[in-house]
Amino acid sequence: MIGKGPFIAVDWGTTNRRAWRIDARGDVEAALEDAAGVTSVAASAFPAKVAELRETLGDLPMLLGGMIGSNRGWHETPYVACPADARTLADAVLWVDERTGIIPGAAQKRRDAPDVMRGEEVQIVGALASGLVPEDTTLCLPGTHAKWVRLREGRIASFSTWMTGELFALLGKHSILAPQMQGEARIGPGFAAGVVASALGDPLARLFAVRAAHLLDAPVTDGAGYVSGLLIGAEVRAGLRESEGEVLHLIGRPDLTALYAAAIAQMRGTPDASVPVIDGNAAFRAGACALLKELS
Amino acid sequence: MIGKGPFIAVDWGTTNRRAWRIDARGDVEAALEDAAGVTSVAASAFPAKVAELRETLGDLPMLLGGMIGSNRGWHETPYVACPADARTLADAVLWVDERTGIIPGAAQKRRDAPDVMRGEEVQIVGALASGLVPEDTTLCLPGTHAKWVRLREGRIASFSTWMTGELFALLGKHSILAPQMQGEARIGPGFAAGVVASALGDPLARLFAVRAAHLLDAPVTDGAGYVSGLLIGAEVRAGLRESEGEVLHLIGRPDLTALYAAAIAQMRGTPDASVPVIDGNAAFRAGACALLKELS
Image (tube, rainbow over all chains, first blue to last red; front, side, top):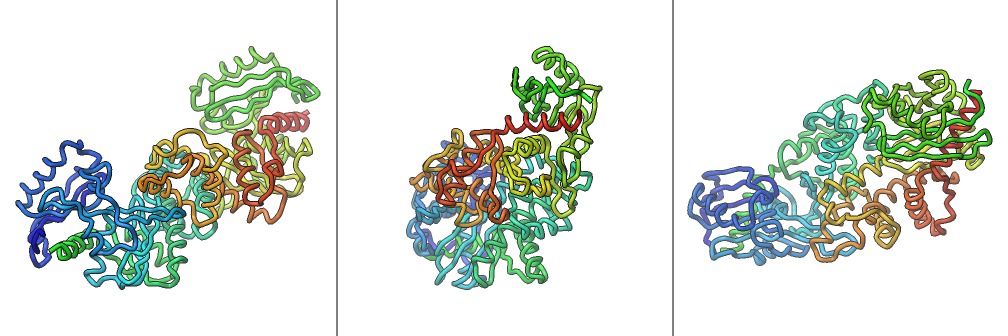
């Protein structure tokens, strides 16, 4: 029981944290973003880092989601099993004190396809509560570990994680392709060529082309874009196939959802803007508000 | 014109080199293997490193293959275009002096599928010259950058490179899966489970299961084996599909060909020993002898 607001919503991830003071109508009154992700905070330092948020944003009740509830975070908060929704997530909030709660992640406890999420479940609850996505559909949440989520009757029924973002980063930093992958992935001819190549076979058989083309003095245009298009193309192609014609919604960081929307639009031959996109931060805040309502 | 032997054959790779003194009948008289791969040798130090080989193995003619002919090697040796065979490779040997030749790599100069190899072409020529593979078939050469090669009328007609070995190494060293991927990939229940999982969808959507299973207190058996089975399984499945029933032959390091043979046998429900396997070093030596014959 922490009232109906104002309150502080915190999306505390691995490398960053974002926090907002939200009033009783759900509007943002103040915000903070910094690099104090859980891996940069010593275990004993979390109380002080939380107090710091209250000093900046107000001495208010607080709901925290994301990796803060992981075994690398402040207090490990057990996952809620699928099917999961605002009600089951709210029931499993871990109360550090009477006005400071950690939102659990969601888990798919299937031996043939074990999977976990932390943070995305809040965005999904928010997208549903805002009426931005139907109760039965497929969602894609791009990121280091991208999630494809099947909603059924307004609940997270099942999901799968693609290591697309992490793999792109590994290839760009540590692989033989790194010299040809300078710069950020961006929409353009290289990205589009990667999406085309992703239809020609397994992406793991197409990556080396970046190196070979360089050695043969016919380098691919924008290697980072090409690899990004190849990996995202493969992911989106499989995801769309499995979503069986449901209207796909993208939720996440605008730079990432733009890449995914471009890949989808290219495959469908439609404009990028035809793919519904929801801002991940806005969805997180809406989710925190929806959970607050369940808790009040 | 460097005679018919004895001579020294050198497979000089990125991280290792192997050299053999081979007599006029093709038998090995002496051998050397060390860690003086091209990336550990300064550009100016190659003549001394070559002289060192002759001091150890004899003052003889020498044929060198592999990355020694790359732009990181001793003298860059232009690729021979596909279709390539012993004749076209021999014609393009780069003579450093009258008894020291660098064997060129092979290139597939197709804009839609550029690809290159250096060193594998010698093994392929050797497997053909030894009568160990038919003139029209598909070969798989596992490695950091695995090659799938289509032979037509005894020539390398086309090929594709899979970054399977490099990706496995990247995931084991740098990814979020690293803690669950300790140890070498080996045949066993974990590897077999990975091969099974590779049939269930894109491997990039199945990798994260290793992490999720660990977090859900139901860890996969042998994470390194599982990831290896997943990646090799995906590669072999695609390769077999494209080889359209041709008898696949494996050429390479015995520990790697054993993994590939196990994956293939598991998919087919046949014994591991049913997959023909050719030792990579023996094939390289046979290839060097076949090229020597072309040059004599």
